Image (cartoon, rainbow, N blue to C red; front, top):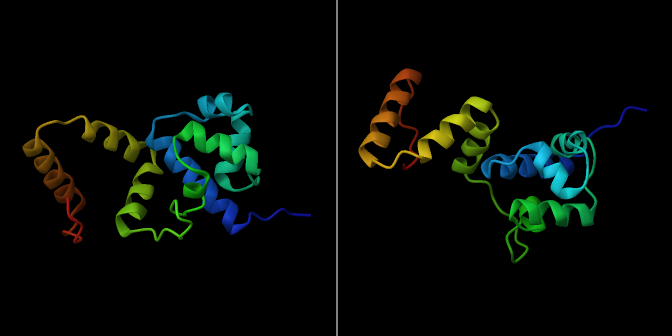
Length: 134
C-alpha cells in the first residue's frame, strides 16, 4: 500500500526545514540533537513520516521555537496567516543559492550597499517592484 503524506505533516515538515535553515543548522546536527538519524529528519521535513508529540517538542526546543509555531499557530493558539513576505522567504530559503544569498546579504552592514545590491538583483531578474517594503 502506497503511503501518502498528510497535508498537515507536509506543512509541519516545511516549517521544520525553514526554521532549521534559517538558524543555519544541518539535518545531521538537528538529528544528533534530537536523537534520530538525519534520514529521519529528511522524512519529517518531507512530511513522509509524522513527527510524534514528544519528538516535535524536542525539535522545537533545538530550533528555538515552540511546537505551536511548527503547526503555524501563535502562542495564543490562533492560526498564523502566512504573509506574502513569509512565503517569499520560505521560497528563497528552499534553495541552496537563496540561502547563501540571504546569509551573505545580512552580513552587509552598509545600507547603501544593500540598496545597491537589491537594485542589481532586480535589474538582473528584470523584476518590477512587487510592492514589498524593503
